[in-house]
Length: 443
Image (cartoon, rainbow, N blue to C red; front, side, top):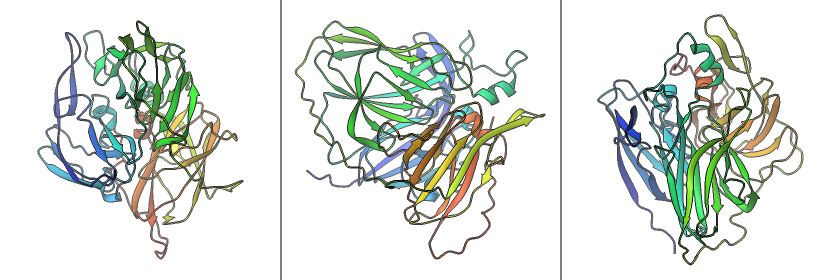
């Protein structure tokens, strides 16, 4: 049955408060409506989302709708919107065009505001969704806390330049705002697990203790066919959807983050949550194939029409600056509506960088010259250290000022961010518009 479009109106209040991440363990947090994550927005393709943001913080803020295909003026960056000052209200209005798992977060002083909990998830359903026994949302984050449960600050043994270089990673892994939860699941059930990585810099190499699962979705919704796997890498800003189960009654295992070397140390194996499988229930889960059709944007070999180089350089002041095509806060060339874009994203640096494109989905054509494991619609992709990723995307008729950047928030703040315009075909090319919002450090 086709959904009848409706208008969904939500009030979000950004504020500071004390949040209990575990029994007896409080942190001085930021969030929407006094909670971490903020309210999950659930809607359907065709709905209109109206969000009234009231800023009760002591600093300016905005909301970026990560993954949603919004008009440029609704993108929530300081380049297209005046930051919402303390005590002010701003209304976002968005037509929902795509099913999938998305999220919302500030694009002002992100390194602090997102780190302290200012984010939330969005689930948009389509007309043809597979049936599962449960649909479970996992919003993952990490907080860098000291032994008193307070957010750490740079010091003589943890200088600011090191956090700027590596990105801010913490040892307290939160699932939906909670530390080390235990999750109950019925035996015999197959569930849809939607993951959002809201961390500043942490990569989650997901594992169910080695148990198999199916990858069924990415940033832009369902894949064409499920992909069997025993682990999946989720970089900052990315989403992934899994079909999990069935398991036997009495099973107990850990959802884990396996070690991953992204250029900032391999790290250690960490527990995200404990899964306990209880009494069995009949399953109603059904997966019909293909899950969807994804038409390729490019057939065969294709030459890039832009090159994006992610790199860095030493800075006497800050230890390191991050650049795109040799510039901090790069101004890219205009992109005409309807002109296929094939971009080579090169990373000669010694660190991985998750590349995020605002407002548009792309298809990954190759990673280090090899085709990806599956075709998907993406808005964030990991560019491996010393490697390259080739993507294709088609700018639809949403002209305006857009951006792309590394989604390690400290790297974006330190310069690995670019702005460009999507222009009407008849527009004459001109010098990039002056921008000001991100030309300062956001640490």
